[in-house]
Image (cartoon, rainbow, N blue to C red):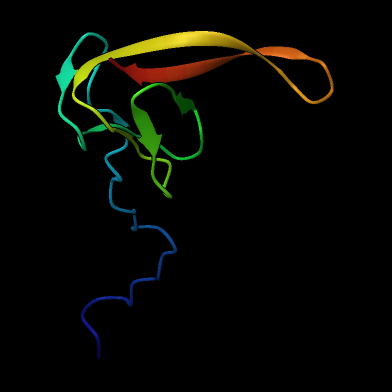
Length: 90
């Protein structure tokens, strides 16, 4: 005879690994060419001058310089205006 009643099963108890996204270099910090500035999912930040975007939306520096963030007004295809965040290195 069993000395302990059988335990039930659960559907919980799992978690995914952290993806380490976010801003890696903030405004007015200096970077070298090729350094990652932002790891993101989607285009929360857009690449500006001296910056490019990888296929996983990673923004990295193309030239050495100082990081700056700006908000610019963009006109959509239907004429509506909205703010977009851009990252620059100069």
